[in-house]
Image (tube, rainbow, N blue to C red; front, side, top):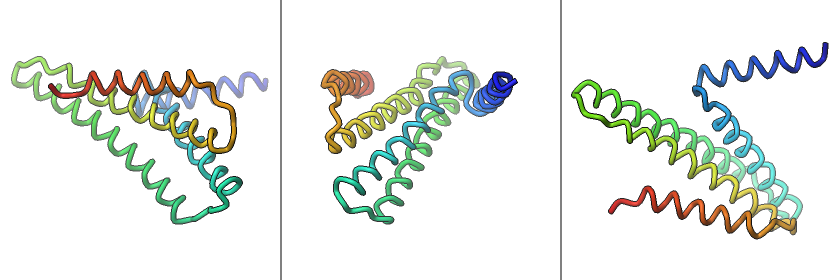
Length: 148
């Protein structure tokens, strides 16, 4: 009985996610979870280690995360607009779909790096390969998106 409730709840979440974000909804859900974890680790770092909790700084952090979502939404919206315009005028513009995905990937990396930085500042041992791997991934994304 309990397993059925869990399945039903997961199914509901998945259905809502797919309806709003499409079949890759879990990437957006993951970004939201990373937003929350980053905020929590930042708060813990400020309160327990730096001893400087500030509601203004916390509000600024929340605003910044809201703006990330706005930029991601704009990137996907722009992509969709250009693909649709390309269809109308007969030009293949599907490559601009990468705008949204590169934006989301960049912000995912940014959130993970921020969480790791918070943990390092709280004296949590973070494997160096994680930090190095994220640096390499960010550089690869930057290389793909740099204009020539």
